[in-house]
Length: 463
Figure 1 (cartoon, one colour):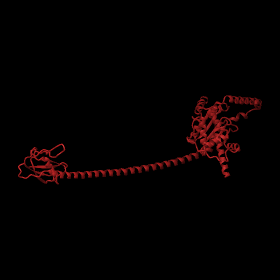
Figure 2: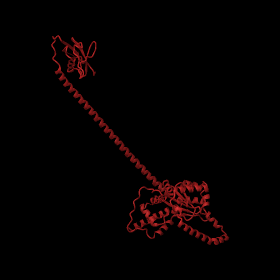
Figure 3: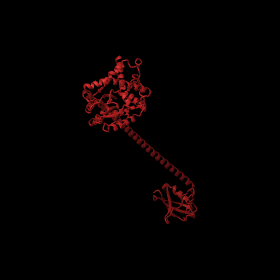
Figure 4: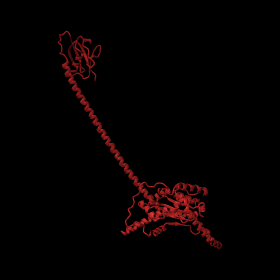
């Protein structure tokens, strides 16, 4: 149990150190509290800290769960500062080798030069002290404007514009955006982020910009392998990043990359270097640290493959569900169609039955309504011979004064007669108006000109 607690302390100390390196917050308790607020998620805490300084909302919409804090461990152990120094000492720092351009001037100093340096040393000490005192006093009455709220992107754009005016446009491609945006971009692109803090007042700055950063081979290497972010330390954004990296001298470069799922400062390059020396240094750093980005790429590719596979499985599942729904809809539509057809057949059958019943009722009623057939010796008798569509012949005697509707009744009630028919004469051919209706009463035989025996034809209208 004690060993687990110690390992947890070491992990938290490492995260506090990383947080201090990236944000520049000196207060250890403040660093720890910030990490506790973000569930000890270093990347989330760093991004939100920079965004808060820039006056924008946090990178993440939801606050992470706050890690529970054990009752017996409420503060960082007293030995934390020593541990922090030990951890930071493991960070790779590159400085000019002996014989490089920054040391070349001191090798050729003569005894006279050394004597002059010793003579003016007290004056330098006094002037430096007075400068520090005056700066301190001015800082009390007039706070440093770099500490106030600024426009991070505007600071970067102003620096790039001034740099191009002062040193020309031959330099690595500057990233147009804030430091936090550059961190996000490097993380997404899995590239090295080279951070350059530009100090106007340093003696080596002019040489570094005009010679080292203008070297074609160095520019090509930086542009192909990294994102190059730069800003003036005298601007608000540059000052905040400077406080985060706490450089010792200028020119200053920090190489940041994704390591163990968090953006980490892998190396620091301090002091003036010749172009070939800086190129060799960056190549060494790239060779030594490429494994971190390679591991991140492999992990990201595995996640992408897993995500793609999951999406394909989800798509296949959705397609299967869609096909099942379509099949169910087709089955339901077929059942509905069969039910509709069955209902229609049932309705037709019911209508046919009702029609047959109505016909039978009408036959009974019309048979009762018809008068008795007159005798053949009645002078008013008319004998009608009817030829059916089946070639069968039927006959009946009617009175001349009888309505033609009785002729229609006679045919309608015959079992061999069609359901829908007309009675027509042979010559001249015409249809007899014998079918009764609510608004029509058929004429009598004599009114229609039938006064003697005659042969008529039954025409099936549905044939």
